[in-house]
Length: 284
Image: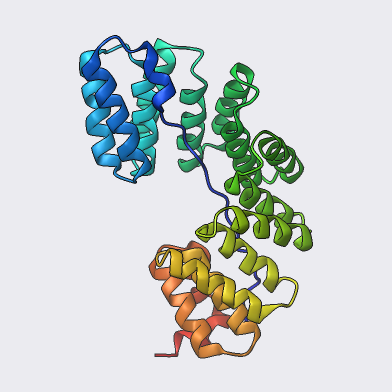
Protein backbone atom coordinates (compact mmCIF):
# COMPACT_ATOMS: atom_id res chain seq x y z
CA UNK A 1 0.00 0.00 0.00
CA UNK A 2 2.84 2.39 0.72
CA UNK A 3 5.32 3.93 -1.65
CA UNK A 4 8.92 2.76 -1.49
CA UNK A 5 10.91 4.53 1.21
CA UNK A 6 13.74 6.08 -0.75
CA UNK A 7 13.42 9.81 -0.08
CA UNK A 8 16.70 11.14 1.25
CA UNK A 9 18.56 14.42 0.87
CA UNK A 10 21.88 16.17 1.09
CA UNK A 11 22.60 19.79 1.93
CA UNK A 12 25.26 22.39 1.27
CA UNK A 13 27.36 24.85 3.18
CA UNK A 14 28.74 28.24 2.24
CA UNK A 15 31.63 30.29 3.53
CA UNK A 16 31.48 33.91 4.63
CA UNK A 17 34.22 36.24 5.76
CA UNK A 18 35.13 36.24 9.44
CA UNK A 19 37.08 38.55 11.68
CA UNK A 20 40.52 37.10 10.80
CA UNK A 21 40.00 38.27 7.23
CA UNK A 22 39.66 41.91 8.22
CA UNK A 23 43.29 42.68 8.92
CA UNK A 24 43.96 43.61 5.30
CA UNK A 25 41.11 46.13 5.09
CA UNK A 26 42.47 49.66 4.81
CA UNK A 27 39.36 51.59 5.71
CA UNK A 28 37.76 51.51 9.17
CA UNK A 29 34.20 51.78 7.81
CA UNK A 30 34.89 48.88 5.51
CA UNK A 31 35.95 46.79 8.50
CA UNK A 32 32.77 47.68 10.38
CA UNK A 33 30.52 46.84 7.42
CA UNK A 34 32.29 43.55 6.73
CA UNK A 35 32.10 42.46 10.37
CA UNK A 36 28.45 43.51 10.55
CA UNK A 37 27.69 41.53 7.42
CA UNK A 38 29.31 38.42 8.86
CA UNK A 39 27.36 38.76 12.11
CA UNK A 40 24.05 39.23 10.28
CA UNK A 41 24.78 36.27 8.01
CA UNK A 42 25.51 34.05 11.02
CA UNK A 43 22.23 35.07 12.64
CA UNK A 44 20.28 34.29 9.46
CA UNK A 45 19.65 37.92 8.48
CA UNK A 46 20.73 37.45 4.88
CA UNK A 47 19.09 40.62 3.58
CA UNK A 48 20.87 42.65 6.24
CA UNK A 49 24.14 40.91 5.40
CA UNK A 50 23.72 41.78 1.72
CA UNK A 51 23.14 45.43 2.62
CA UNK A 52 26.42 45.45 4.57
CA UNK A 53 28.34 43.71 1.79
CA UNK A 54 26.92 46.30 -0.62
CA UNK A 55 28.52 49.00 1.55
CA UNK A 56 31.87 47.23 1.46
CA UNK A 57 31.72 46.94 -2.32
CA UNK A 58 30.72 50.60 -2.63
CA UNK A 59 33.84 51.56 -0.65
CA UNK A 60 36.06 48.99 -2.39
CA UNK A 61 34.70 47.66 -5.72
CA UNK A 62 37.58 45.18 -5.88
CA UNK A 63 36.84 43.47 -2.55
CA UNK A 64 36.67 39.80 -3.56
CA UNK A 65 35.72 38.60 -0.08
CA UNK A 66 32.67 40.87 0.02
CA UNK A 67 31.47 39.51 -3.32
CA UNK A 68 32.07 35.90 -2.21
CA UNK A 69 30.21 36.56 1.06
CA UNK A 70 27.32 38.26 -0.75
CA UNK A 71 27.24 35.21 -3.00
CA UNK A 72 26.63 33.04 0.09
CA UNK A 73 23.86 35.33 1.38
CA UNK A 74 22.11 35.38 -2.00
CA UNK A 75 22.34 31.61 -2.19
CA UNK A 76 20.61 31.25 1.18
CA UNK A 77 17.83 33.56 0.00
CA UNK A 78 17.27 31.39 -3.06
CA UNK A 79 18.76 33.95 -5.43
CA UNK A 80 21.05 31.46 -7.15
CA UNK A 81 21.75 33.45 -10.32
CA UNK A 82 22.66 36.53 -8.28
CA UNK A 83 24.86 34.31 -6.12
CA UNK A 84 26.69 32.96 -9.15
CA UNK A 85 27.16 36.47 -10.54
CA UNK A 86 28.70 37.57 -7.23
CA UNK A 87 31.03 34.58 -7.08
CA UNK A 88 31.98 35.12 -10.73
CA UNK A 89 33.02 38.66 -9.81
CA UNK A 90 34.95 37.47 -6.75
CA UNK A 91 36.85 34.97 -8.91
CA UNK A 92 37.52 37.62 -11.55
CA UNK A 93 39.07 39.83 -8.87
CA UNK A 94 40.85 36.99 -7.07
CA UNK A 95 41.25 33.76 -9.07
CA UNK A 96 42.65 32.11 -5.92
CA UNK A 97 39.52 32.64 -3.82
CA UNK A 98 38.68 29.19 -2.50
CA UNK A 99 35.68 30.77 -0.73
CA UNK A 100 34.21 31.99 -4.02
CA UNK A 101 34.61 28.61 -5.73
CA UNK A 102 33.10 26.79 -2.74
CA UNK A 103 30.09 29.11 -2.66
CA UNK A 104 29.58 28.97 -6.42
CA UNK A 105 29.72 25.19 -6.12
CA UNK A 106 26.76 25.37 -3.72
CA UNK A 107 24.78 27.76 -5.93
CA UNK A 108 25.35 25.59 -9.00
CA UNK A 109 24.15 22.54 -7.11
CA UNK A 110 21.00 24.40 -6.06
CA UNK A 111 20.36 25.09 -9.75
CA UNK A 112 20.82 21.42 -10.58
CA UNK A 113 24.17 22.00 -12.28
CA UNK A 114 25.89 19.11 -10.53
CA UNK A 115 28.86 18.81 -12.90
CA UNK A 116 29.56 22.53 -12.66
CA UNK A 117 29.29 22.25 -8.87
CA UNK A 118 31.83 19.41 -8.83
CA UNK A 119 34.20 21.43 -11.02
CA UNK A 120 33.94 24.48 -8.73
CA UNK A 121 34.51 22.47 -5.56
CA UNK A 122 37.42 20.73 -7.26
CA UNK A 123 38.98 24.12 -7.98
CA UNK A 124 38.46 25.22 -4.37
CA UNK A 125 40.21 22.05 -3.19
CA UNK A 126 43.04 22.60 -5.67
CA UNK A 127 43.57 26.07 -4.17
CA UNK A 128 43.11 24.94 -0.57
CA UNK A 129 43.25 21.16 0.06
CA UNK A 130 42.12 21.71 3.67
CA UNK A 131 38.76 23.35 2.89
CA UNK A 132 36.30 20.88 4.37
CA UNK A 133 33.19 22.67 3.06
CA UNK A 134 34.30 22.11 -0.54
CA UNK A 135 34.62 18.38 0.11
CA UNK A 136 31.22 18.36 1.86
CA UNK A 137 29.54 20.17 -1.04
CA UNK A 138 31.21 17.97 -3.66
CA UNK A 139 30.04 14.96 -1.65
CA UNK A 140 26.45 16.26 -2.00
CA UNK A 141 26.80 16.82 -5.74
CA UNK A 142 28.21 13.33 -6.21
CA UNK A 143 25.28 11.87 -4.26
CA UNK A 144 22.89 13.64 -6.62
CA UNK A 145 24.77 12.27 -9.64
CA UNK A 146 24.67 8.73 -8.27
CA UNK A 147 28.41 8.62 -7.60
CA UNK A 148 28.03 7.20 -4.10
CA UNK A 149 31.59 5.93 -3.60
CA UNK A 150 33.05 9.24 -4.75
CA UNK A 151 30.61 10.99 -2.41
CA UNK A 152 31.67 8.84 0.53
CA UNK A 153 35.34 9.53 -0.21
CA UNK A 154 34.68 13.28 -0.27
CA UNK A 155 32.74 13.22 2.99
CA UNK A 156 35.45 11.02 4.55
CA UNK A 157 37.96 13.75 3.69
CA UNK A 158 35.71 16.52 5.01
CA UNK A 159 35.34 14.64 8.31
CA UNK A 160 39.09 14.01 8.48
CA UNK A 161 39.68 17.77 8.17
CA UNK A 162 36.76 18.76 10.42
CA UNK A 163 35.50 15.96 12.69
CA UNK A 164 32.73 18.29 13.94
CA UNK A 165 31.07 18.74 10.52
CA UNK A 166 27.50 17.58 11.10
CA UNK A 167 26.70 18.32 7.47
CA UNK A 168 29.45 16.01 6.20
CA UNK A 169 28.07 13.19 8.35
CA UNK A 170 24.52 13.90 7.10
CA UNK A 171 25.65 13.86 3.49
CA UNK A 172 27.63 10.65 4.00
CA UNK A 173 24.50 9.20 5.59
CA UNK A 174 22.74 9.90 2.27
CA UNK A 175 25.52 8.28 0.25
CA UNK A 176 25.54 5.20 2.48
CA UNK A 177 21.75 5.00 2.28
CA UNK A 178 21.88 5.08 -1.52
CA UNK A 179 24.51 2.33 -1.35
CA UNK A 180 21.97 0.35 0.75
CA UNK A 181 24.30 0.30 3.73
CA UNK A 182 21.56 1.35 6.13
CA UNK A 183 23.54 0.50 9.26
CA UNK A 184 26.34 2.86 8.20
CA UNK A 185 23.79 5.49 7.19
CA UNK A 186 22.15 5.39 10.63
CA UNK A 187 25.56 5.59 12.36
CA UNK A 188 26.44 8.68 10.30
CA UNK A 189 23.16 10.40 11.10
CA UNK A 190 23.61 9.47 14.78
CA UNK A 191 26.94 11.32 14.70
CA UNK A 192 25.46 14.31 12.86
CA UNK A 193 22.74 14.61 15.51
CA UNK A 194 25.29 14.25 18.32
CA UNK A 195 27.21 17.20 16.84
CA UNK A 196 24.13 19.24 15.92
CA UNK A 197 20.92 18.22 17.73
CA UNK A 198 19.01 20.75 15.59
CA UNK A 199 19.84 19.12 12.25
CA UNK A 200 16.47 18.46 10.61
CA UNK A 201 18.34 16.91 7.67
CA UNK A 202 20.01 14.31 9.88
CA UNK A 203 16.75 13.35 11.59
CA UNK A 204 14.93 13.08 8.27
CA UNK A 205 17.68 10.96 6.74
CA UNK A 206 17.85 8.73 9.82
CA UNK A 207 14.06 8.39 9.66
CA UNK A 208 14.10 6.90 6.17
CA UNK A 209 17.18 4.80 6.95
CA UNK A 210 15.37 3.26 9.92
CA UNK A 211 12.28 2.66 7.80
CA UNK A 212 14.40 0.60 5.45
CA UNK A 213 15.51 -1.60 8.35
CA UNK A 214 11.90 -2.11 9.45
CA UNK A 215 12.16 0.14 12.53
CA UNK A 216 9.06 2.12 11.60
CA UNK A 217 8.16 3.47 15.05
CA UNK A 218 11.69 4.76 15.56
CA UNK A 219 11.55 6.24 12.07
CA UNK A 220 8.36 8.15 12.91
CA UNK A 221 9.98 9.54 16.06
CA UNK A 222 12.90 10.82 13.99
CA UNK A 223 10.66 12.41 11.39
CA UNK A 224 8.58 13.97 14.18
CA UNK A 225 11.77 15.63 15.40
CA UNK A 226 12.77 16.77 11.92
CA UNK A 227 9.35 18.42 11.49
CA UNK A 228 9.52 19.98 14.96
CA UNK A 229 12.83 21.61 13.96
CA UNK A 230 11.70 22.51 10.44
CA UNK A 231 7.90 22.52 10.01
CA UNK A 232 8.32 23.06 6.24
CA UNK A 233 10.48 19.98 5.73
CA UNK A 234 8.57 18.31 2.89
CA UNK A 235 10.91 15.34 2.84
CA UNK A 236 10.32 14.54 6.50
CA UNK A 237 6.54 14.50 5.97
CA UNK A 238 6.96 12.12 3.01
CA UNK A 239 9.25 9.82 4.97
CA UNK A 240 6.95 9.84 7.99
CA UNK A 241 4.05 9.01 5.70
CA UNK A 242 5.99 6.00 4.41
CA UNK A 243 6.63 4.69 7.92
CA UNK A 244 3.00 5.20 8.97
CA UNK A 245 1.75 3.42 5.85
CA UNK A 246 4.00 0.47 6.61
CA UNK A 247 2.35 0.25 10.05
CA UNK A 248 -1.10 0.31 8.44
CA UNK A 249 -1.97 3.84 9.58
CA UNK A 250 -3.41 4.90 6.24
CA UNK A 251 -5.24 8.00 7.41
CA UNK A 252 -2.24 9.65 9.04
CA UNK A 253 0.04 8.48 6.22
CA UNK A 254 -2.26 10.14 3.70
CA UNK A 255 -2.23 13.37 5.71
CA UNK A 256 1.57 13.37 5.66
CA UNK A 257 1.75 12.65 1.92
CA UNK A 258 -0.64 15.50 1.17
CA UNK A 259 1.29 17.87 3.43
CA UNK A 260 4.55 16.88 1.75
CA UNK A 261 3.05 17.48 -1.69
CA UNK A 262 1.68 20.88 -0.62
CA UNK A 263 5.21 21.85 0.45
CA UNK A 264 6.56 21.01 -2.99
CA UNK A 265 7.85 17.45 -2.66
CA UNK A 266 7.50 16.09 -6.20
CA UNK A 267 7.83 12.44 -5.17
CA UNK A 268 4.83 12.67 -2.86
CA UNK A 269 2.82 14.61 -5.45
CA UNK A 270 3.53 12.05 -8.15
CA UNK A 271 2.67 9.18 -5.81
CA UNK A 272 -0.69 10.75 -5.02
CA UNK A 273 -1.49 10.89 -8.75
CA UNK A 274 -0.81 7.23 -9.41
CA UNK A 275 -3.73 4.80 -9.55
CA UNK A 276 -2.67 2.71 -6.57
CA UNK A 277 -2.82 5.81 -4.38
CA UNK A 278 -6.60 6.14 -4.79
CA UNK A 279 -7.14 5.05 -1.18
CA UNK A 280 -5.38 8.24 -0.11
CA UNK A 281 -7.05 10.57 -2.61
CA UNK A 282 -10.47 9.47 -1.41
CA UNK A 283 -9.70 10.33 2.20
CA UNK A 284 -10.79 13.73 3.62
